[in-house]
Image (cartoon, rainbow, N blue to C red; front, side, top):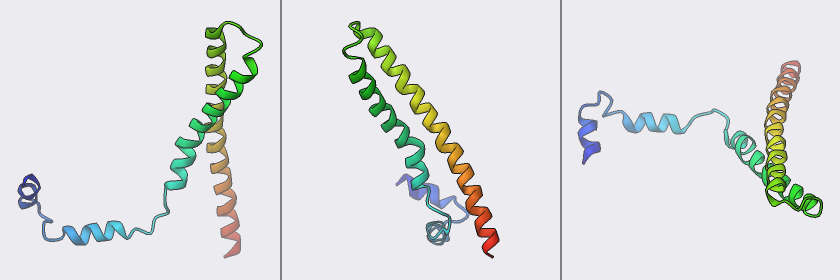
Length: 105
């Protein structure tokens, strides 16, 4: 009901379907891979690194608070480092691809 009231005052109410079809047929590259690299990979690295730190420090530190702090700090550093590394690699690899593509033409 509310959508119909909004559409009545819209200047493009007769062209909505055409506009949505044009937006859906975009030739732009998918951002799915970039989203996975930007958000999922650092989380996975954090989880794996914290498990590795926990397993390696279990026998060395009896204080669980100190062990957890070291695990979180170490895993956080690795996760942030992976974000910088993937950003650097994506930038440099895209420069290499663009250079290669420009030479092939």
